[in-house]
Image (tube, rainbow, N blue to C red):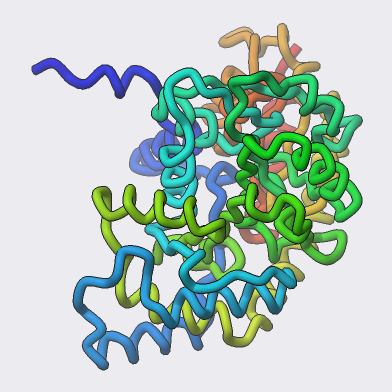
Length: 396
């Protein structure tokens, strides 16, 4: 059997790979602490679950419109106006089976073979692979810890060529935790209004997990609003990872293009999830706020533990629930069983020695860093970093 060459164009997500390796060790009876996956360790709020139960009892069990139920798309518009002061109509909204599908819809609707997609590093692992699936070319902009892991207008403009089709970024950022301020986004908007042929994919999935103030969307700047596709979903802010609901807000022509694609891939997403999503989007945000308050406490503890690690250089995340330290000071060191030569070696060393899972920075476009999540209990966070310190002490 000869498989499609498509499979050779992209890689398995390192986040899922590390989670799988962790599960394999657990199956052997080893106590592995998971700091690799980006999943809130909270249960879905009760009022959202109640809405799903009601939807089941009310027999919302049939096929749904490709773009989603009208009341859900209206709820997305209500949320965007309430939280972001963005004006969209339901015909500008597509709901999908997770924000990952929303990203795929957008890129497949925009990118042809040879088109260039500018992505600042570090970026979520799937960005680059989706571009490759679309036969596009990834153009990386390297950011630094010192610059707060944010790209400047000058860096972006230097990367723009006649083949540039898309600029994509996240704020808050997975994995760095960087959050773009309104002033920084305005500077980007002033740049992109000179390039109306470039579409901006703004991934705002971590919107509610913000440690420095109000979330700002680049879509707020009217001169470039039609160039922007806002991508969001319910997994992070509402602890609904398994429910699989993402959405896009964009201009009508892009919405129609993404709807056409989704109609052939999955059609509409789960009917019960959609009814639960209405309750999430227009309902009580207190559970989401409480989650962020707990993430704030864990962030404080995690930063103290990370900054106490010899040789680590770490940016204090402004959003999301990760730290992304530079661990390159350990390259070349050995415990006499293995030598650390890169971030992948470092992550595997921690998994096999400390029994703590993480994700190597190469997957995010930053080969000197490693991502650690603090979406775990305070007890596990403290235990994990004690193990990491003990394991690193064996390296000489």
